Amino acid sequence: MALLFLPYRSAMAMTLYGTDPSFYTRKAFLSLIATGADFSYALKSLANKAEVEAAVGGYHRFPVVDTGDGSGWIVDSTRIGLALSARFPARSLLPADRALAILVRIADDWFDEWFLRAAILFRARSAETRRFVAEVGGRNLLGRHAGESLTPAEAEQLDALLPGIDRFFLQSCATNAVSGPGIADAEQLLARTAALLGEALAPFLFGSRLSLADAALWGFLDSGLLWEPEARAWVEANAAHLVGWHARALAAAEAGGGAWDPPDRVAPRLAPLLGGDALGFAPFLAANRAALADGTKRLTLAGVEVPARGFTEKCRAEIAAEIAALPPADRARLEAVAGDWPLLQLYRQP
Ligand SMILES: N[C@@H](CCC(=O)N[C@@H](CS)C(=O)NCC(=O)O)C(=O)O
Figure 1 (spheres, rainbow, N blue to C red):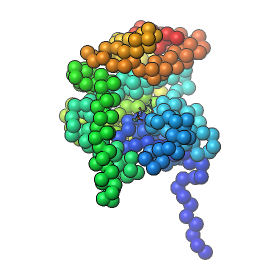
Figure 2: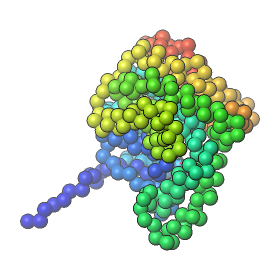
Figure 3: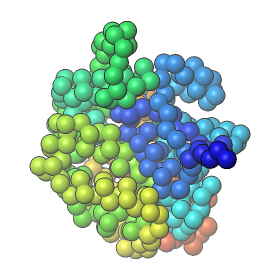
Figure 4: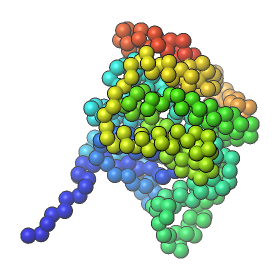
């Protein structure tokens, strides 16, 4: 009798579409592992781009997840993490304690919308790093990973793609004020965050349980700061604790479990990062909101004029709505531990 080989994935498995150099794809990847989802990873390439984008209403960014069970697609790494957490509550990346969950949402937003500037620093500063990243990004567009051999025609296509990818990276660095005088500012953000994380990770941001914010940090390390050779050399020399943390976070995601620290333990530990001016994020959020409200839609960040970010404001407003919906007792507990953070005051505004 012939043996039946059952596929590892069930027919209902999810598919994560993204690319290898994409921080947010890696954040979604870790979120899928941590929540115990049955999934596979597929490159979003030139060959499937039209089909994937048609499935998500024209959304051109990645990551996106096909849930595989007919319940639809999920776009955006934060949405993906939240949807997975709702689907797999026993392995949720968000605590059931609603006050604590707000702190997770704020920390996640801080990494996604602010620490991004530190993560792209080496791409902004070095043509060699851009080349390294663009080479993999270009291969991914052709449906190939690093190290896979290319046909002569594909090698030619890759060469043709590289200058456009390089321009794209430089443009996104400029949009995030990681250009000109903004480079020194991003260097400081990286150095200060790396030093503060030495104290803030215990072993993860919210205790021994992985949160959505940890997944965000992991993504920035996995496809950026620990992957790009120049960035990795900096981390090894200046923030070696992050190398071990990255491996421990993956192991914890695979194992599941862990416990959340209570808000009154978490908030003082994260205050050096998220309290005060939140390493510049608090004044930026305020200026960004104002620039969108008064219609100028431009602001100066670290000496660089940048377009205001509608998406960042949308995320802020979403968290504001979640705070407004808190039952009074949870709201009081949130205020008791983080009421004096300027960042929380900003997230409270409708
Ligand atoms: N907020 C989104 C950001 C997604 C995003 O910016 N993805 C980048 C790659 S890391 C992208 O799609 N870039 C291609 C483009 O903008 O066309 C998320 O968290 O998923």
